[in-house]
Length: 523
Ligand code: GAP
Image 1: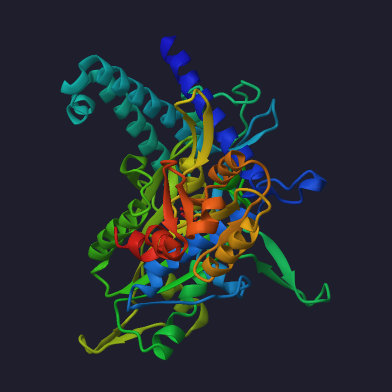
Image 2 (image 1 turned 30 degrees about the vertical axis):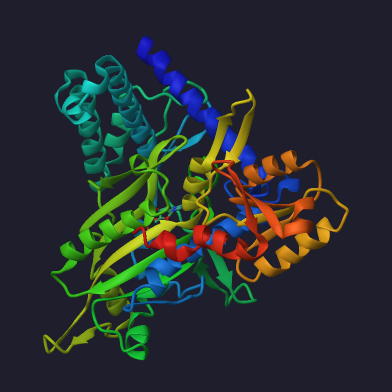
């Protein structure tokens, strides 16, 4: 009983925190519901004036690290519409399905695998609770590793979770949907809305959106909106390899929109129907896939860690059930406000895609390896991250409520400064005495280098709070002393420390903190 109450408290806190994230994103101009004045469109969102800056900065941070910092990786921008045969070849027409189940009482639709995974998530929460309890009991002598590998209760939860996931993986692999339903019934999983266990059978549901190309109904061609950007890379593999004279191993990267008719479309921008991916396909010699898979797992984790969101907030989840194209796959999971969930996938895709496109087009998609003196279809290791999901990871991690010394609180968005929409706000202390003119001049000078904002409305304390909530790392205040000695106050968002600096030193002081180079060098 206590366990259930504790779990409920954790979930309630998580829900509260998540609600705060969603409302802050709206209130401070980050994310709006799409077509909100028409009551919105489910799982479709618009990025607002600050959101688009953050999103662009995340994309640039990825592009710099993945494309521009590698001599052997180039980028492309393929069209969203592709020849429909692409999706037959890739397996998406036949196998890009999710198992869905309906609750007959609430009429709500769920992904059957997600219901089971959420059940296992609750076991994980119980493990965390045991760890916290023990840490409190043993104090400094607590050894977490030893505890989780020896405590009978923790081991019991772990084993139960593993057994369930193994069975789920096997049933899905064998397309045994009856067993997935049986598992849901055996675990006594109830509909969160109706509370009942009155389930339909589990059915497969294809996630691709269809559309038409052409004006007349008779001649129109059925198309799909791409469900992943990767296929745009595969079909261009030979064009890029030849025109770029690329030698294996080499990568092709792109960022762009993808579309999926998700069954369970909740959790804000975590699972959307229209979203953006940042993907890189690394073409390698067959037989070397294990080495490159491990290489990219490590490289991608390092990229995440460079942003300083906390090592404990990431973990790998190696897949039991592999997608139709993969011989190994792992997710980098992040601790979102609703628990650890997939943020990025690293997949060893073998030669599946290129071979399939060869088969369906009758064209060779091979590489002549001068060292081996032979041609082969390259293998591929892919890194694939959702830009919106990365946005949510960063945004939710950054949003904090701090108790201050004077018994007040402040809401602060501690975004990594390299990604913040505005690097600085320039604030004249008053709207007279020539201070706005100096502030405007500072804005004019700094904006060549980074995004800066001018803000003169309200008392300066309120302006600091507003910039804290937007996540602006620096505030520059122009006051009457500035008139005498050309210095300003530079206030830092996270520490709230203030120092006096010369106007001529501002550019260097801020650049040092927000420069992509210094952040990426942490990798
Ligand atoms: N090309 C491989 C691929 O698309 P995936 O695991 O289906 O693999 C990769 O997707 C990443 O795309 C995920 O890790 C996630 O970050 C993001 N993603 C997938 N579906 C999404 C959705 N409906 N909404 C937002 N992001 C999504």
